[in-house]
Image (tube, rainbow, N blue to C red; front, side, top):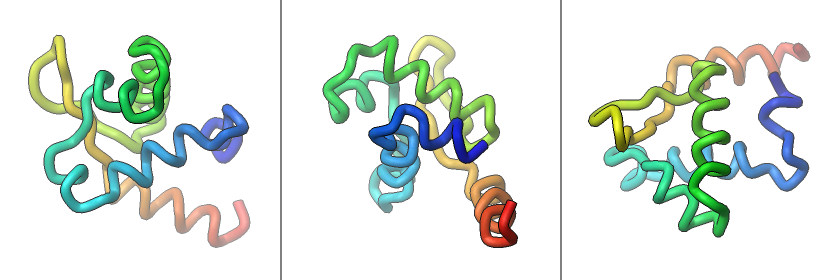
Length: 88
């Protein structure tokens, strides 16, 4: 999982997770358009990152199916953090 989070090498997925941890962002969540604008990447690229993080269980989409808002799954993040702390 660490490789999935660190690829691409610029840490894009880790930045998305960190951004979603900021209080205002955590409350409202992010759309793929939000991520694309913030990172300066095309929407399909942002959506790929969000879908991968969702498939890992680190994010969960809410709201409308055509424009979901993504939020962190804090319980899953705590589990993953604990795995890494144990040297996984």
